Structures are given as structure tokens and as C-alpha cells.
Length: 412
Image (tube, rainbow, N blue to C red; front, side):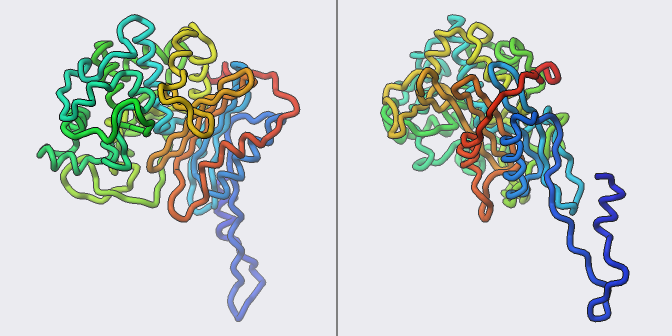
């Protein structure tokens, strides 16, 4: 729709119609979902699903990419448009924060160091990082236990260390913004919530430690090591670590939306800011939730696990997704290195979601060579519809025949 026709829609009113002596007001134009990129007719079910999902939740920026047997078959950006403003429709290569989808990247980086003989999965974190913990049980925390969320921290008990900037600043008497070293010093001086290896509890802090181990062992910044050893072999060049402020956004990065605000964690001013922009410290999230990517980048990334030898060997992949020492949960699934895993006939399904203020993301590798990535510039908040059911909705779509055209060369 051109800007002229958009203005005409907003201004239009029947000239002759009068109600109570006043011109009748035209009904507001019906909201639509604008798209970019390619969605083949054979995959219309997925495209229709995303359009409805975006429309129902009024999502201003979303992406979907679908891969089948190594070929990218669908790559599309979506944008809710109610004509009240002019949002930019994301392209298939626009960058989004991917939150905890970063964890399978970090686990793969740690496993690559293991594969190259530079790190052991049984190595103790305290020895690797030179930590002197207040709780002697931390000596039992290994690299593998960090990867599988078995380190002994429970954010429902002692809170999530990655989101305690003001608390840590006050406790250590250091100014904002705090950094990785401050978070580690704060956490190391406090007891674990349970014995390592006895209970799986999701831990962002455990992945922060993995990032520091990758840096210590490789001798490189975390981001540099990942780009060089993991992303470059797959031809992925757009991905990078995100920043906290809108003014620091990467080229092509979308704008994040949230109804919530927070006191800034970037300085001591006490200023109230939009939660996605300064309400948390994005650089501190690096190894547990700091990456930017497009949906096509993420489905391309799954080839690290589907094509052994490119980044990781078959043996390394098997170790990364192996069942943990505590076994499987009541649903028959378990947490491997940065992936939820479930065995189905002839295939190991792996998936993960990511969520932070202004972001919801989902990545899945499923049977029959099918992988997909979903990215949104907002997440479920009070009063909004559910987001977590998107995977169930995707699983209900049927495809009678798959396209044969491969879009990979358009993006890589």
C-alpha cells in the first residue's frame, strides 16, 4: 500500500452522510499483516498460521524460516499494521535478539573445545576459573553439569543472578553497570541451592560461567571464538552479540516492544526506561542469551548438528545431546547441551525457546529432516495471548508435497 493510499484511508469519510448534523466518521481500516520474503504455496499452512498469530497478538516484527533436508524452503518477515503508524516490515535477514537460543551455541562452543582436546567435560569449574567458593559443593560442578543445568543453582530460591544488577551493585558496593566478574564474585560467595548433579534447574548463570570458560581456555573473546569456530564454517556472517540500547542497535536489527519499564541497570541515575532498552544488561547475557540472528541464520545453524564434521563430529554431537545423569523427566525428554531432547522413532528431536522483555524465539530440529525458526519482537505479557503454544500449532500443519526450490543461495 502506498503512503498516499494509506493517508487516504485514514482521512476518508462519506462526504454526504450526516448523523445528527455531523459528517459520519469512516470505520477505521481493518488491520492487516504485511510480509516480505518467500512462502511457497505448498507451505501456505505455515504462512497462514504465522499471519494469524501475528495479527491476533499485534506483533510488529516477526520471522519464520523453514528448512527441509538442508534446504531453506520458506523465509519470511511479518508485520502487524493497523495504520496508526508506519512500522517497518522485517526482511528475512533482519536481526532479532534470540535470548536463550544462545545456549545451544554456547554448548557447541564448549564441545568444540572438548573435541579439539583443549577442555574436558569432567573439568571442575572452580579450577578452570580459579574460584574459591563459599559452598564446598561447588567443587562438584563440572563443564557437563553446567551444560545440562545441573550446577546446583535454583532461581526460584536464590533468584536469577543475571537479573540482579541493582542487588549485586549494592552488595559489592560497585557502581552500575556491573560486569561478568561482579556477577561471578557475588554468586561464588553464596551457597548453592542443592547438590550439583541431583536436580535439573534452568540456570542462566551456569551458561554465563560456560562463556567465561570458553574465553579462558580459547584465549579469545567468547564472540570471536564462536564466530571463528562455529559460524564461519557454516557461512553465517550476520550473527553478533547484541547491545542494550536502541542507539546501539546493529544494522538491520528490529525494534523491541514491551508494556513494561524498569529502572536502568546501565548507570546510577535511577531513570525509568523501556524494559528492552536498559532495563537489563544485554552484554552480560552473552553466553546465556545475548546473540542476534535472523530466522534463516538459525535454521542454517542447525546444520552444525545435522551435518557432522562441519563444526562438530558425530561423537561430539552425541555427547552434547546425551541423557544426563539424572535421567529423563516425566515427559520422556531431557536437557542436553543447550537443547531439550526427546527420542522419537528413528530420530532425536531437539528444540529450545528463548524469552526476555521484547523477545520471544523458538528453534526446533524435528524428524524427517524438518527444522524451523520463529522470532518475535515481543513476548507474552499480562493481558496478551499465549505464545508458548506456537510449537503445537506448527506441529498441526500438514504438508502434502514439499517444495524443491532451495532459497539458501539468496541468504548465504
